[in-house]
Length: 100
Image 1: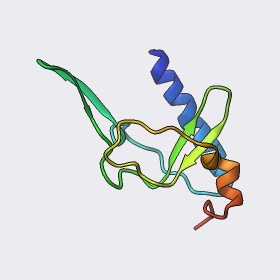
Image 2: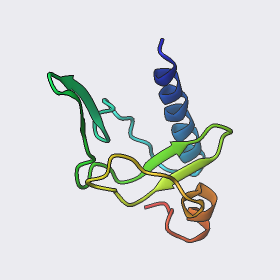
Image 3: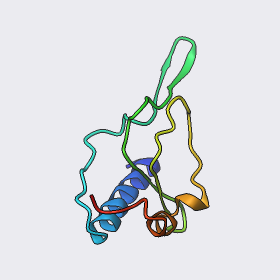
């Protein structure tokens, strides 16, 4: 198994565990294509950016175990960088991460 696939599996399991422990129902993604699609053609690599409203929340697990949740969809961007305000604890304390 590729290392990047293993990282994705660990992050998915982390998201399920974290949000389930917080009392949320968790939907499991069927594919990983909502955020960024990369393929190659005769001109080289093609990267498609995030489409508008591709997700409700984006869970990010960083090396070292820091967990982030982004509640805004960065449409048109190729990447995102989680910030301190996106840490799960900070988002929960702000009242933005609440049970429906």
